[in-house]
Length: 88
Image (cartoon, rainbow, N blue to C red):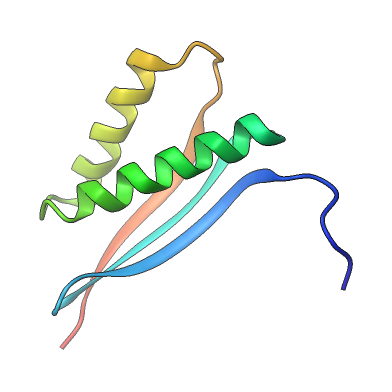
């Protein structure tokens, strides 16, 4: 196993939204290094928090995108997938 020499913006997460729904997030930030890692953390936290509102994956991504489009001065972007799995 070789340790990473730099941080980056690849991420995934899974978490319980409620007793019957599992949230899944996979993404990648367009750059590398500390700025990408920071953007990854912010975007992952935002998507996770929006999922707790009970909205669709499309709306989660739209709200996250709207925020970053209005606040992004570095022209970095996130490619992401959000899914909600209904569990029995």
